[in-house]
Length: 113
Length: 111
Image 1 (cartoon, rainbow over the protein chains, first blue to last red):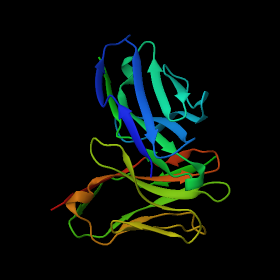
Image 2: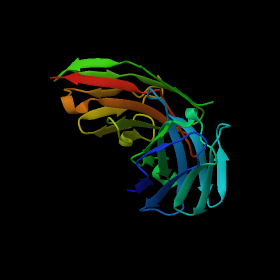
Image 3: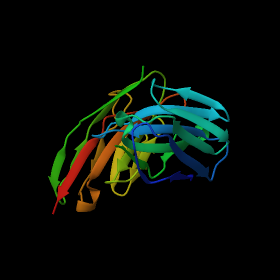
């Protein structure tokens, strides 16, 4: 199965500062990649997904952006963080030949202060 | 569009009790169905899955059967342990590379 590495695990950032969360995947090639956010409570919100290098689809309008510079690398960014960007961010990876099974990284806790 | 409805809980049980977490779905076509588990402070782990009608997914004593006639995928375990305390998510995988998740069910198992 796939292994998803995600970092940093925890960060505290001031309002207005930039953000970069990085995710890399091992054990597969040409995966579909995803960024989810889990705010207070438990629900998962899909932010971005990518089916290939340079191909990014945004699910919701927001203060964030995503990029996929390499096949197994997915980056979540912001130029200026808002308080509302605080949450638990999860990178995920899946392939269509695995029956749409998606595997998740360990997550990154972001607190904007 | 696709949607998943699961009992939101929270669910509190005593150790060795029987667990059921209900999950129903709405989808076009023939989706795959999943249960994920999230332990405190961690990411989601795939617990089990089923890819076609009447399939039964099972893992770690948990089971769920893909019921097309009732559009359901209920999670069951015969005897829960304290270590099963977590949030459980039901999810549906359609043809668009994305999973649709339920809102999660918090399970607490007391000794």
